[in-house]
Image 1 (tube, rainbow, N blue to C red):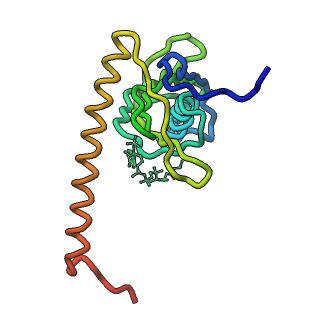
Image 2 (image 1 turned 180 degrees about the horizontal axis):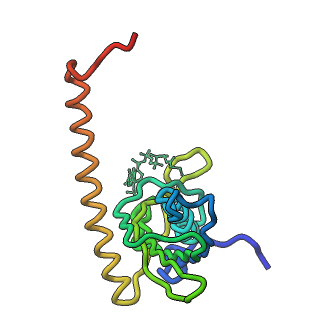
Length: 181
Ligand SMILES: CC(C)(COP(=O)(O)OP(=O)(O)OC[C@H]1O[C@@H](n2cnc3c(N)ncnc32)[C@H](O)[C@@H]1OP(=O)(O)O)[C@@H](O)C(=O)NCCC(=O)NCCS
């Protein structure tokens, strides 16, 4: 049996679905015993990357992380479960959605605590973007997420253009510069 996979021209959302579970340890928490936001973002990045790897089967980098909603605090000792899948593939980039739940180990109550969208870019060994397979949405939810991902990409591009414009204006303003001695 061959161990190398032939990259298909297209993939289903189901083939990208990824899940991971972590236990919240003391090092992951703030002084109130709640999971640190940055630690949760790290878990989200890892779980998002798993879906992007499954779709592209290349090296990938995180290009953007947006729309993170921290809905409820997560407590020391909770089990944190993350589920991700690719929402849409463009040329070399993929938008991935990640949803996070926290489970109280004593009561078994599990709550949705966070959601996020990330963009990963498939790259070669030299860091150059490479094309990814197209994504075929199948269910009604997948079709909706696929359409919404295009709107978010347009919004991201508009924001990026606006920020670039502002940076240019700031650089051109000499009053914003000081000399540190
Ligand atoms: C992301 C990166 C590979 C893009 O390289 P680039 O030379 O700017 O490439 P391009 O402008 O041709 O864009 C390539 C793709 O990335 C997307 N992209 C680039 N910057 C992006 C951003 N900030 N947000 C979302 N998508 C972005 C483009 O839309 C394009 O997508 P498409 O091919 O599907 O249309 C490059 O900026 C990079 O390496 N950034 C650092 C990533 C990193 O270190 N991440 C953290 C550690 S993993």
